[in-house]
Amino acid sequence: MGRNIILIGMMGSGKSTIGKLLAEKLDGYNLADIDEEIEKSTQSKISEIFLKHGEPFFRMLEAEKIRMFCKKENLVISAGGGAFEADENRRIMKENGIVIYLKASAEALYERIKNETHRPLLKKNFSVEKIENILKLREINYNKADYKIDTSDKTPYNIVQEILRIVNDRNSR
Ligand code: S3P
Image (cartoon, rainbow, N blue to C red; front, side, top):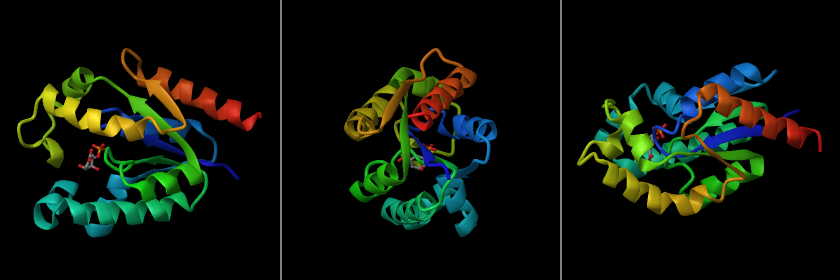
């Protein structure tokens, strides 16, 4: 019976990539990508949900999926960038898993996502400053994670190794 490992952090911080690699490396663990689960169950892209129904509706679907997947065990859960903002989501995630914040600078995030078009929150006035502003607002909550990993200048492989060390260390206590 293993605790869930929950990855949080800004858009472009590598949660999905790291989540996939981590789930492959951890025996008996599966991946649950909250955004993908929302898209599967609604048969709509996240950007369409934002456009047609607005952000509050998306946040409701997100909270529902967080509740649903955090109840399970042996999951690597990759949560959307805004998922750790709501008090209730934070409480559920912290109670049901080890929460790891993948930290990156606004510049690094910008470089990673500047060519992508599917991020509804960044469609307007996309710039390093805009990311910096969102990051500033969210960092207060991101810092409530159990662990923080600075992803700058690290390869996905190195980041996964770092998380595996954290998990093994906790399991051997
Ligand atoms: C969001 C991040 C996205 C997605 C939605 C909102 C956010 O997920 O959940 O577009 O508020 O930062 P990623 O962090 O996986 O891009």
